[in-house]
Image (cartoon, rainbow, N blue to C red):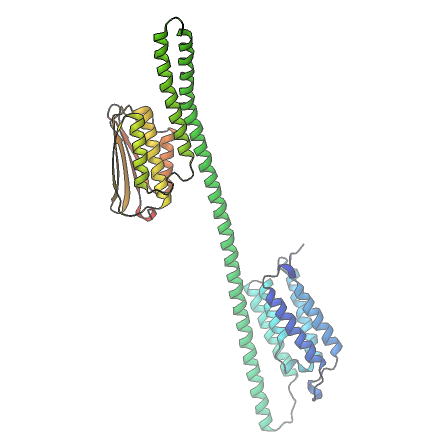
Length: 401
């Protein structure tokens, strides 16, 4: 079954209304009396019926089946031809029907079909015009006057058809571009939503893993310490006191793990702070909680974009988490600077290091790598057992602002 453009989803509703106005003018013109018999309608009823059917056909335009398009256009041409035969004023008044025919063809045909219908419309116009011209004998001056009139009207009509064709092509091209842009925007929105959901899922998985590995371990150890202290409370109070002190330390550590998880879950970790201010806060917390000396250097003389600042903050946060858990370091150095227009981030510690051939697939390292690659940057790890670790991130200048 072929598809049709109906009145409620017509691409250009104003064109449909304009068609009806022009057809109404044509019907009124055919009804009004005219002094000259040559230009009077011989069968106004046929003209009115033909114009009415022609107007109603504009309510449904075929758009898919080629046979339907050809039959539809042929019916339009037949109606115009009938109107031209019985309407004496067709050669005198400006031929609105041909303009409407070309306009509709632009809505249902591709460019070759549009050109064919335009040529047919021009040919029908010439046929009707020549058929209605006065016959000789006429004075020479009158013949020249009619020739000039015929040539002028033909030229004006031809240029009008070309103008309508070009105008419709432009309108349809603009409409198609808007539709393609809307589709592209919708796809981009869906992709962005999918990426956001994926990032959220990965972040949740990371937090779940962190809670399981850190908080779960701390609470398990805390429970064992408390159970042992309860058993020794009566027989050996001093030793039970030692287990209680250890249990308190584990409780403080579990509380800090919870705070870190909550901090990670924040949708805007910087919270209206600059990256430098956020780094100072995280550095102070890190040094107080771990006792590791933290030295930072921030040499960026303009404000970074929120996307870059958030990614850098998360990378630093993840690096410090890994250092506090695994590195056994006593000092951490952080450097952020502009190097030939690109942003360079270096985090190094003096911990025990690790073999990069065996230990570069952890969730934390993979998360830092993914954040860097998402900004079009480069991520590198340099470490060896007993020689600490250095993480280097380079982000291109085009992504900084």
